[in-house]
Image 1 (cartoon, rainbow, N blue to C red):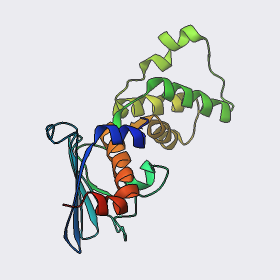
Image 2: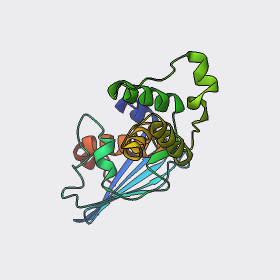
Image 3: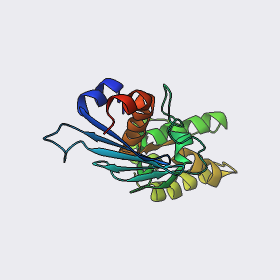
Amino acid sequence: MNITSKNLEERYKLIKVRKVSDDIEIVDLYQSEDEKTVYRMKLIFAYGKLFTSGDVGAFTFGGSICHIKTFFKGDKVNLGYWKEKVEASPRPILCEEIDVDKVVSLIKKRFEEYEIEYDDDDSKLETGFFCTIESNMYRAYDTVEEILKEHGVSDAWEVAGSIIDKARDWDGQYEYTCNVIQWVENNLEEWEKKYAV
């Protein structure tokens, strides 16, 4: 997902910033004055936490963040580290569906590392042991572990877990929300003066 500041500026043309108290600040983002029901998002900075809500679901970030209004500031969204700060999410932050092609690629890479011989005939991928891998992460894990065991990988359960984790994508709502949060925090000081209500 490639979201730029320009994309967000085009989407959220109406910005409102309200300082309720020293500990509470609210940022409302809307498409326009007339369109307050689509492309809307609310960020509430309160008591060391950040609560977001809107079209992409509701998230709560906390987890011992000292400076909540500057924590997400920067040039690069850090989904992996920020995931540790999520206290509530509408659904899993990492998708439960996996990219099967990526799993197969990771298994082959592991076979190369362990110098394991296997039949690499492309037609075999469609009819052989790789074709039994499903996109559901739980069923895929069992199949990958079985394939690894059959090929003599001693720590098959650990390797299978690593492969499955690497083949999972970030939830789109989480990724989008993190991009919006960073954009807001990068601009918040200026917006406090410009868009205060």
